[in-house]
Image (cartoon, rainbow, N blue to C red):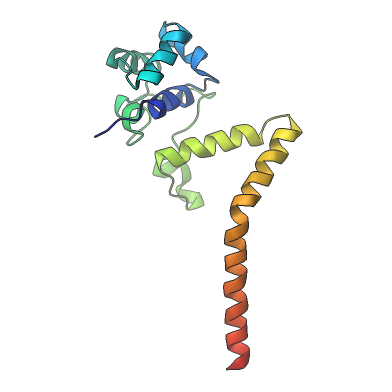
Length: 153
């Protein structure tokens, strides 16, 4: 299985509610330059993943693959840390089925949407609208053609 080390670093940051790689480096006791080098080389020492798991209770499997439980059994996530959006209990009542990567993306979108800078929120809103516009147009065309087919019948 091929590892995407940039995604591993992203999960390490996201799972610890850290804003950037420098904050992650401080948590792991390495320099920001070392973190940058690991990412560039596509190689993170396994000892850092294990260290972070021991410090935070995040599952090594989840950190490496984004699959499975986010936290080790018996570990309660701190209130300021994200919940495991991939866990069925976290969203079963809403009927959502998010993969771990989708959970990370939702967390990022929420972080921007909750920002106090109105220009960031407006930009995010316009970007989402732009992505959805083709889908909305296709749905509208399909609805119109079914109405037209029903009228002519």
